[in-house]
Each structure stands twice: as structure tokens, then as C-alpha cells.
Image 1 (cartoon, rainbow over the protein chains, first blue to last red):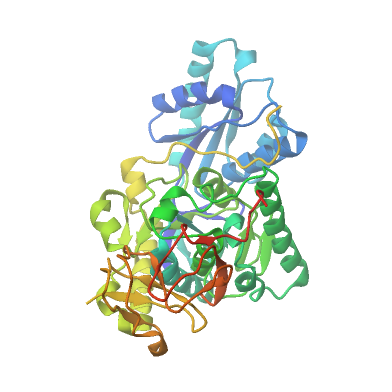
Image 2: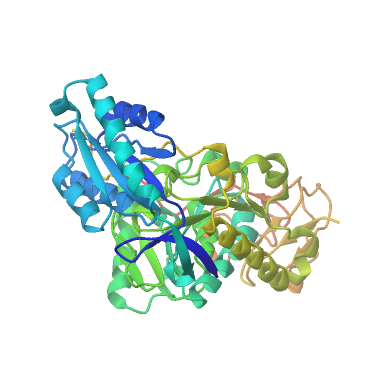
Length: 389
Length: 94
């Protein structure tokens, strides 16, 4: 797979070239959004974290925001800080700068008010935009690509048809030299056998099993049956009965290759061909985990129809549910045509995965996903494990 | 023609690939040995029915793995879902 992308100074290649206006804390969101509205083609990153949290979570928010700032699709960053938050602004700025990207910062409490902050922010963002416009697309190939994988609003067909096709696509991406990252550790509960069989390195095996145990322990500590939370009411309507059934269908999307790395939430994919990122299943947190890990594109399988994309990554929505495709074609990118040919399932899976690879290639070359066209990509979150204090 | 799919030889449930009406005998794709079950109620698209009798508190198996346990006796052809199966995982209530 060849495409034209934006080559960054740290060696990464973006499939998009975003000027990001990044709020460092919930209290700076409005200013970051106001600046972005006045700077054409800029993208705001707004979130509800960054203050009055346990130190471990503040570190995680800082490293996750840094991960988003150095995502290969990001060309330049304006940091918008309130000035009194818990996020480590110096560290955040340093990490983005070290990647070779142009970065500027704005501290609202120092600059004096909303109007001054927005005006200064627009000025700085326009300067960054000039830098960004100097960058041009150059040839790249699949070895430059990290693809994130996610399933959402699943039904039973997700596990039976959609996820196996994406799993086959993942195998093909890895065989051609690309890298893949997936998370949703909650949706490994009950599917441990299918994960562990694919991990050779004992240290990675222990880390993945530890992450599954931790997330189940946290859920159990509330003292309730997690059903309704996971699987969700929508999953249950779609035919999924228990978390174990959901998990067994979910892990199929990661294909059949060896899982050769495990990273914490907020960390970046290293040399591993197939990496697990410690993360929950919910979209706003999981998509952030994949983007911070360095995924340039995300393949998102859906059963009942999940609409959302992500501010800095094209998110490709796929389904093998013909009813969902027909009803929700407005936000589904690729429909897999399986039902009529189900007896010859292997050749159908092969054909449909090739269709998805072709679409992925087009998206890498600049074609817009449905979520990008719909601008359904504004609300994000960062996964934290401690209380707000 | 109504169809259902079985993922693993060990499975004791099949998943409907279309809405299946009570009293019909869907074609089960995946394993020839799993044919011949008459469903005892309407099975919605994407939902499951039992391929054999399951006693109370016995494992429900799909993908060759335990996906939960029966909370009551389930007959071959019965609709299998949250009304007669519970999870073994994430149970802070137990």
C-alpha cells in the first residue's frame, strides 16, 4: 500500500496535516474553541480533565495530551492553558517541541481575560498555520502506518462477521509491514484464552492479563453486576447476552497474529507489529488512547451503528449488518456484503477485507471518512482511574 | 429460508442470521451435526437459540468458550438470552 503523507521531523508520516488548538484543562475549553472558530482548518482538542485529580491521573492526562500533540497527523500545536491547572504544561510543551513540531502556548490568566486570550491565540495560530502550509505530501508506504482498531455499538453480527473480516484485514496489514494497535481491555474479560495463546513473551502476557484483572476488579469494587454497563443495553438488544460473549466476538477484530507489545494509556506504539494499549471500551476514552498511541487511521466496526469519529484521525466505520448499513448509511463508510454468500465464507471474508484495505488506502491518500464529512468528531475524553478530588 | 450460524463444534447455541419464526427449522451453517433443531419461539435476527437441552446452572458455550451459565432449564430450540443466562464475570454483586 502506497500513499502520499506528511513526513514529520521525527520520522512519522501523517495522513492529515492538522493545526491543533489544544486545551490543557477543562477550564480552557471555551477559549480554545473560540480561537479555533476564527482560524480556518484548525481543529480544537477539548476535554473534561486536567485538574483536581490524583497525581497518577494528572501524569496520565499530561502524557496523553502529549501523545495527541505528536500524533503523526498533527502538524502544529497551540496549547491553551488556564494557568492554575494540574497538567504539567512545561512537560507537555517540551514533549511536543522535541518531536520537531512547531508549538506555541497561551496562558489565559497571564494574558488577562477572554478577549485578549482569543486575540493572542488567533495571532499565534495564524503564525502556526503559515508553517503548516509550507509542508507538502511526499510518498510513503504501509510501513509508515499505525492503524487503530475498535468496535462499538456491537451486535452479535459484529463477532460473527464484521470483526472476523477486520481481523483478516489486520493480518494483511501486518504481513505487508504495517503496525496495528488495539485496546478495549474490558472486552477481553472472558476471552483471555484467545489473547494469551497469541502472546509469546511472558512479560507481555503478564501485563495484558494484569490489565484485564485490574479493570474487572475496578468494575466489581462497585458491588454490582456489570451487565447493562457492559454489555450495554444496545448490545443486549443486538443479541449479546454477557460480557464473555461480547469479548469473544470483540477480540476477533485483532486478527490472528502474535501480540508483541503492551503499552500504558498515553504511551506510543514502539516496534511492535500488534500492540495492546491498556484502555476501557468506551469510545471517547478508547479513541483517545489509540490516537495518543500514534494511530493515523482507525478502523471502527459497528453493529447497531456508532457515528463518532475523532478530531485528529480519520475513523472508518464498517459493518456487516445489512440493516444497519441501509438505515445508517449516512455514517457508515464500508458495508460488508456477506449474507447471500455465507456458505463460501472464507473467500467472502478475503474479498471484503481487500475492499476495506482499498478504502483504507484511499483514506490515507486524503479521501474524507463519513465522520470527517459529518464533522462528527468533537467530543473526546481521557481515561482516568482515580477520583476527581 | 431461515439461517443460523454456529462458530465452534463445542457450542450449544446457534445465532440467527435473520428473524426466525417459532416452529421453523433453520439451516445451521458451520457444522453439519448441528442441524434439525425446531425453534420454540420467535428468534430475532442476531439472537441465540439452544442446539441441545441445557440443565439449570450449566455452561452456555459459543466460540467454543463459556459465555455464561443457565439460570433455568433450557430446552433444545429455546430462545437463549439475558432471561435465562447470567454472566460469570464482572459480578460485584456476588
